[in-house]
Image 1 (cartoon, rainbow, N blue to C red):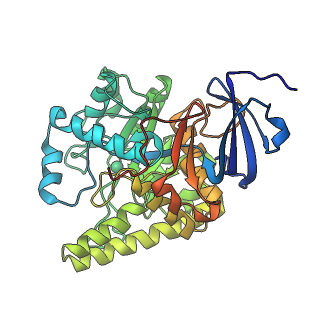
Image 2: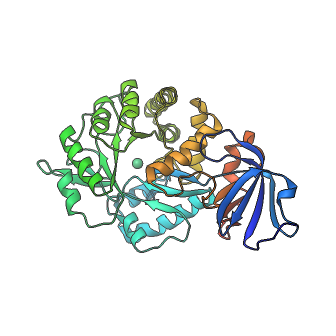
Image 3: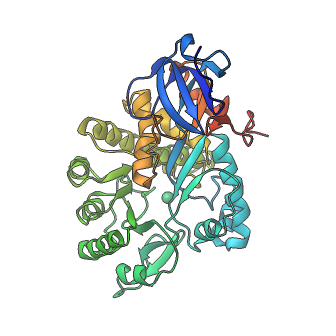
Length: 407
Ligand SMILES: [Zn+2]
């Protein structure tokens, strides 16, 4: 008989999607020791010692925890105008409880790593510095974003005065951060379809900023819509383009050439169209719906061209809720021609690479045995992700997870 090691446990899964983009594997066995995956192989009963502890998840699909590579932790996706207004003017003391609530919603939906898209008072950085999170969620935040005085960006950041360089401002920051956010265009117009706004910074300013940031091991995320603002940001050497509506095919090709990641946030415009229609702004809703369709088309092209895409939702935007919008965005990737495993890869491994996560977002040998348990086969995904069976942390069901996330 084989030797039984008390610290080893065995987990049988009906299906495994490992996050690498590889096809789902059927009936697998994970051998876990002290919270780490020792190996993964096809299930066979004889592998398990007589007294070995087996957790039977043969009724379920397991996959790595999800990553939302673009959201706003200090904002709710609420459509209540008064609440939104209040959140936009509130200070950190008022916003910290919201951050707690949003993290709970994210955890309940299996999202265990997030990258914030910026907040004007650095509240998320303050929250992180105080170690206030109750959940095992890796948080990355740029703090306040930089935008040009008089241009879009005041809701999530601070203005760079004319004549002042964003690189100089970065030098003066004293927060610990691994990301920097720059706003280099306006928002999508709801009056004129596809209207392009001019870039907020020059290519040289962006280039200096990226070089300085990279020398401090800080990555640069750039909000940019439209051809010129996106082109400048890619050529300046930024790490990711956020949104990228109406950037055009050439910029998709440029992203491959420069090794830049795209975070398309498709769901924002779909949700916005629904919110505007509800509010009776029919012409605005129609343009938001067209923005959404055009972004889906760009995502289709990105897949064909081979752009590295990390899934982000922009949760906190009107009608885009923390946690559940990740599945909404995943469904849209399906519409754009991504297979389920490719979609999962964008929401796990590609996000992990962008965020610089050590475990790389893939369920593999030597990775932590952290995974989501979704009842049923991969054919029932991503739908079943919205009510997970369980979340395993270090090979054990998390005590923090309750099956009904509404409670
Ligand atoms: Zn955002």
